[in-house]
Image 1 (cartoon, one colour):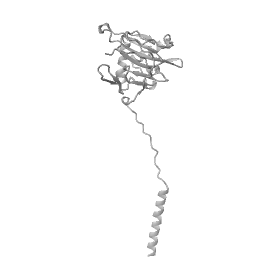
Image 2 (cartoon, one colour):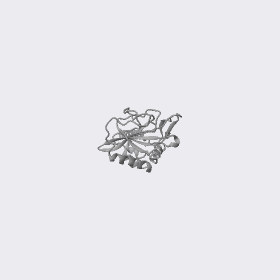
Image 3 (cartoon, helix red, strand yellow):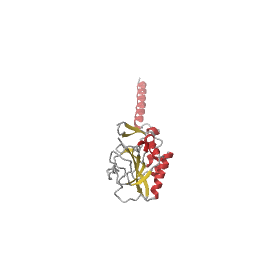
Image 4 (cartoon, one colour):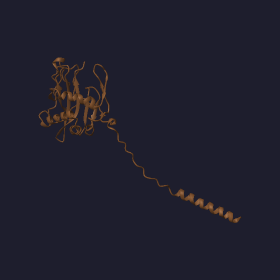
Length: 235
């Protein structure tokens, strides 16, 4: 009888020791592996919405335009002409890296389809993918119809730029050139700019004129694009 009791006590002590050992030594866990999710181009959120900064003097509705009040530093600079030519090439060939190299590294490039619509700021790293991404932007309301204009940069902005670069356009330094407007044309920045202007066609009474205005600034002595805004005749 004593032998059986002794055996029970020994077994109990062995089990108790095993429990204490298990509690005192935490289980070893494999290190967590980070998970990286590669988003497809169609889901990339490229650009951020930003307000315009009120600034310059409005132009006149007769189409003459109003030059900038500040003395020009870009009108006679061959670097600026080369910048506009490179921008044209980037748009016509869908060259993202080239476009990226033209965007202001200090503040990016503001883009607006409508003069009073949504403004999206693209940084140089965003510009590399603007011909690929299908991320949809609400650019604002169509004048007259009030319909919402939405779509990617490639589907909305690029066709308009391709259109003007494939027509006989003229360049106007620090002048908001247009073919007659029902509103005051205002460059809402303090910086300098070029108007890329298509005068329209006689068959349409020249009401099909349109102008893309390109803001240009210097960073370390080199010109870059800081803004791009479209103007056209509105009913």
